[in-house]
Amino acid sequence: MTRFVGTVTTVVVAVAVVSLIGFSTAATVARPAVREETAAPCPKYSVRARVAGKAICLRDGQACRARLGRQYQRYGFRCQAGALTATWRRLKRPLHIPRLISGEPCPTTTSS
Image (cartoon, rainbow, N blue to C red):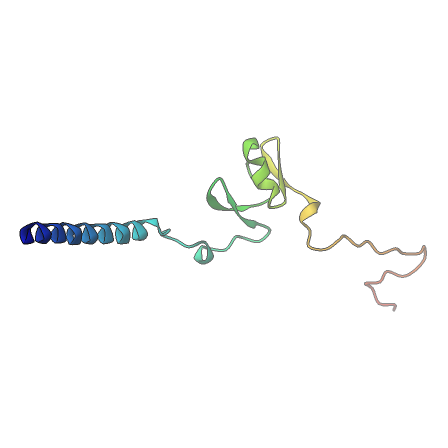
């Protein structure tokens, strides 16, 4: 009977060790090689986005796929005729156009 208990204990310990090794290896493999926060920033006039599972920079006029249109809309772009076009919807503030009365000097120039 003691021989049977010793064998069961050995098997339980072996299974525990193998499972721990398996979990630690899986956790190491699951981590991404490059974190999105440390990736290179997008150039001027571009927007950092995640489209089709990839981190990319979107900009006006860039080639696009119509089937990914919903994902482009999330970042303020539309896919038209195979090229991205920016939408006004993503502006951070409303567009303000000042009203000028005829003959009034331009607000950006100084009178001389």
